[in-house]
Image 1: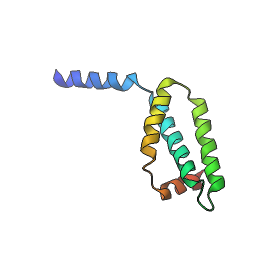
Image 2: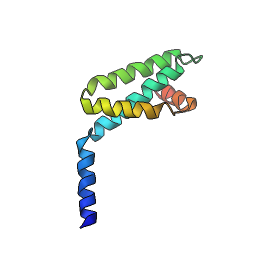
Image 3: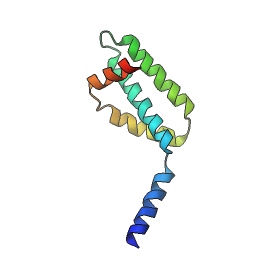
Image 4: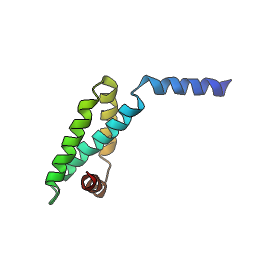
Length: 94
């Protein structure tokens, strides 16, 4: 009975926040935006940094809700821990 109650509570807690696609979008938008800020002064990555910022804005424009904004802020705080070489990989792929 306790396990059933825990599963139900965890499902309820998960469904109260942003939906899965909003969380994924917020994660990518936050990573792109933070990486754009980190790469804007890096030689050879200025235009790629601008591309990352444009892509982050494009993702954010599609998802406008209070839950998305909360998820975005949470993911942005985590994204500052990304190393510079990961940011360069994001920029090169875009």
